[in-house]
Length: 421
Image 1 (tube, rainbow, N blue to C red):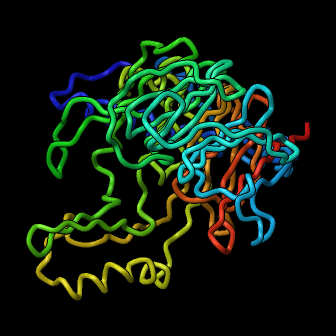
Image 2 (cartoon, rainbow, N blue to C red):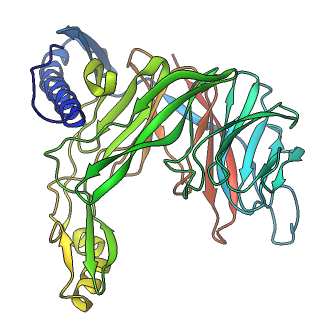
């Protein structure tokens, strides 16, 4: 896609380039939906590929062939008397499945990695609290790169390397003393021997003042790959999804605007980034900081309106706080009600290149899975997930998720995607 010269900042220019591609994709998707009905198979499912200006637009319509998530094993405490058992986790914030088909669990509160078989049996545990080799101050994330397990300690500031058996093999130093983890500050696996870690760069100006630039730094089993990607910004003209309020003696408090559509992204193999505005089911695959669009994956779904009662309920906390802090200054001044609900949640890339997308529907959330070309392979119900913890995948269609039971105890659930046809 040829770029038109723009005097704006590079980040904003990239945002506009992505937006233009997604807008064209939306127009193309509507046209495809109108022309494909007569030629579609009985299931109503069809995938079309169109190349315009060097960009491949992939549009998926209808219902894909039947598929299901089959439970393989659930790892977690079975009774309240399992005190001290290996499957009684203090707090899980990352999981991975190794090339040996074993499940690796980062127990952040116990500062250790616990390993289980796909039969649920505990195999071994390694790591402990500390700052020395094989120790953790903040076990933020883990992921596989080739035959090595990488762990990310955001407090000490290092990526540790381990064998499958838990032998400490070495480390790479990173910026330390960061807080968070499990959500955005983590390792992002995108291939059998390719992943990225969250990192921060130089300070840039934000509407709330100077902030550190967000980066993805490439890694593999032999060290850094040399790819460093700048996290993209969402559409500049999109409605606000967050309010920041200042009150009292300079205190700050933030509020998420209910049903507002944000911007989601994930690094991909070969230096690309998958990104999407959550209000529209259109995922752009871009290079060079968003300047060059390679592919746009579209899936037209009907919009769902925001009801009056759910809007009022969603703003209850803000309205109660605002009534007690009438002199507070908020940016924006108040929540604007979206016309429709977000469609997309998070997006993820499996080591085999498949794209897994969370789709938010009133009837329940879905996983929708696409192949490397952008063709929809499956649409299956999504089971409850623990907030702030990313799922994990392998090249054999295994999915690992974390959930909390009624007592807020963590469980690791392993699934396998089975497709027909």
